[in-house]
Length: 439
Ligand code: GUN
Ligand code: ZN
Image (cartoon, rainbow, N blue to C red; front, side, top):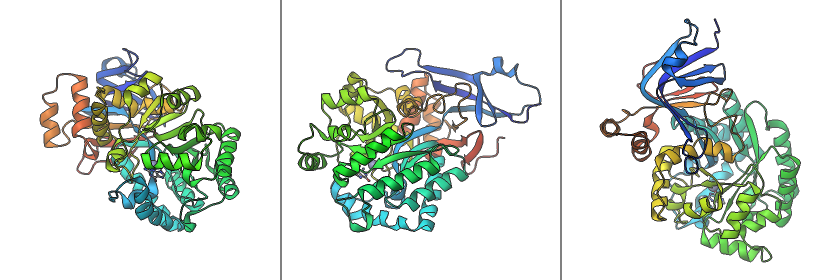
């Protein structure tokens, strides 16, 4: 008997490739079995086939009628902005001044930071998000608090200390050298400690001096397995500001390229106001896009151009951008992603959106083989979606005729209520209230 083995019976869906470019990209088992060995996936397949390989003593958790998919990955979110989600302002720059900076000021207090980090992680898990790329604040204490909270739950998370040494209130400013030194200390302490990973995090070009961007680029070169995260081309006022601050740069994106910040494991949020050269540079360097539709619509920033991104073969992922984003749920994020694509005359199937929120994100982060699908040996981060979660979902999904229609119903009608259970590294970390223990 192997006491570390657990099995889950449900419909299973995961991906091996991008359905936009590969007809055989998804794997579907209507009556499936997911076998977990300790923290990792051992096998995913048809129940009838895999059941025969299991020792009799292994308990099978019965989720028949439910759908198991890999845990969602949110590639851009600000944990300190949890308490100011849904704060109105006429655009990005006034929103930052009025709400964001005063809220982030509170994260010099480690106790406050830890309390918010714990609430934030609870909320991610309620929504089925098992990995996120997270901005902390300029305070190293905010990063300590976040990683401590994440490590205590054994979650696979990426986070970083915001670097900003100009054009922000004095209470949120670091210096070029101080910001780099603090970031390096955090890399040495937390990067690849358990499941935690560090992102070098210059907030965006307007709040970093040239010297700070150069030092961030040096760190990115010195520590190639770390991530880089920042914002680019979100809002037209911001783009004009960057053009005036960096007159020699060819474009906003070029500011980051000149600093050595475009590489694999670089995640750039928004990417709305890019040109064709920028898109080609993103694809060539391996930098990836975090598409943030609820934020972009809420702040009136603009519409992401899916057709241009796919033509350039950019690496794509979906993100909430809370607190600019208005939902923690990747299902609600898919809802608005679909509508943004429609406005650009692109039709985005639900299958593609589920790919982007799982394996697509993992590939964008160079973490495929670790998370994002059910390949043997990957970490057992998965969620149980309930087609009967609400009266309306139950009624609609009783009438769907295909996998695409079922996924589309989840994407248009689903939110945290659709997530019946969330598992991380093989352990249950969220069970929707009112749900009986199935295991
Ligand atoms: N650009 C610079 N900082 C931020 C932020 O906190 N949120 C968003 N949406 N854009 C930014
Ligand atoms: Zn953001």
